[in-house]
Amino acid sequence: MKREDLLFVIVFSAALAAGEVPSRSGPAIRGLNEALVAVAEKITPAVVMVTVEGYQQLHGNPDGVTAFGLRRGGGSGVIVSADGYLVTNAHVVVGATRIQVRLPSSSTSADHSIVRPPGRALAARLVGFDVETDVAVLKVDGEGLPFLELADSDIVRQGQLVVAVGCPIGLESSLTMGVISAVARQLQPDDRVVYLQTDAPINPGNSGGALVDVEGRLIGINTMILSQSGGSEGLGFAIPSNIVRFVVDQMIRSGYVLRGEIGVEAQTVTPGLAASLGLQRNNGVVLSDILPEGPGDAAGLKTGDIVLSLNGKRMENARQFHVNLYRQQVGSFATLEILRGSATLNLRVFVLERSNSPERFASRVTADQHLVSRLSILALPIDRTIGGLLPGLSRRPFGILVARLAMTTSGPSGALLPGDIIYEVNRQTVSTLQELRAAVEKQPPGEPIALQVERAGRIRYVELLLE
Image (tube, rainbow, N blue to C red; front, side):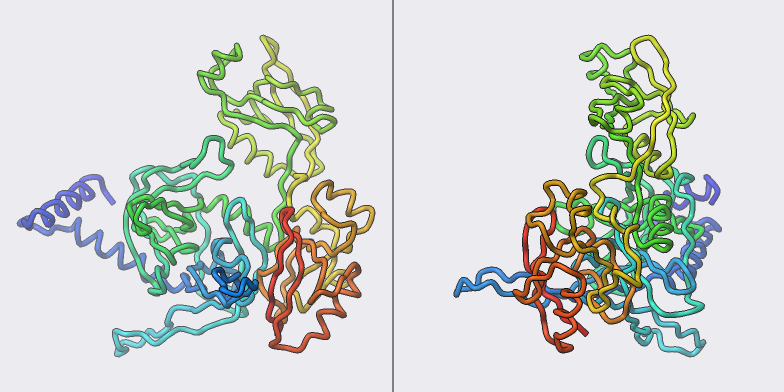
């Protein structure tokens, strides 16, 4: 849209708000109207409603007995491939035992009613999710589905018009419009995830929906709002499409996200830090910690080093440094240009898989040896080798580690998470895959079972309803 056309739209909108209509409606407002209609027709067929079922603990039981009840919820999702891969938010589907996707109505008849019939409902499988970015990938059976390609979010500019599409509180294919308020919003200093901030109204249920530009290009996945009232107050946030693509590509290829690290902690240099620590620069990236005997330590990195560049790319902040390490191939070497005092050094550092990632065991499992189909997981028994990789993380010397989720049609979709350790099935201790499979297989379909699970250092019961 031309600059003068946009100015006319703004003036026209202001005049309408004041109760005055300009003498000419002109091509600008008609052009905007046609553009928005075209965007809606392009993107709404690929934006779906996601509904989930799961169990949650009930509180306030007068008998003091722990009880669980069925929880229903949902959000939105975006189809990103013709063969049925979808993107939504991890917080929408984590813990779900059933996931269903409802497609928009496909009625295109010229004489159809303005009220469309409901679209098809399809069972969805959880391919995987990434808590850090709040991205989840689902799969439905289908071919030739309408889909949106992930665009390049680096081209997004502050002030450009955008459209948000989703299913707020279950209202299918709802479209709102706004502008990009900020292109790289960090909610906390040195957060490793940045967001597109928009004032396009986003409400509960929009999570996982599409944020597109006026050309209909998918530039983000709506994920959250900041609000004092619980509704939209013009502070909406979307995960940029480039971050989404990084997660989705790995999820589809391997079912999990692999990230690299070099055993250092980095912080963004501020003028205050520079003055207090006597640094040579008042911007950039400073290394605040070096893990003993880690790759950075072995390469000769020191606390207080300023990172000038990583693999030849200038480093301006800690978030940029960590994200570029994410994308470095595990097992390769990264080249860091370091400022130490007045000396400039170039050091090669070996890149390891991030040690605290719950998905770090995914490469150790195969479907033919480690599948527990009724739970839709690939799992490992905790032996001396696996236990040695879980220092302080496993409360007991036995159990079954959930290495990754599996794409099966018979098991729950997201009640178990990578990194979970299963100790019991209905009070029966399990320490081998054979014992776990046997304990699960003997449960009749439709009957709930309770797994005793350790998650993030806390032991809890996870209730499942098996098919």
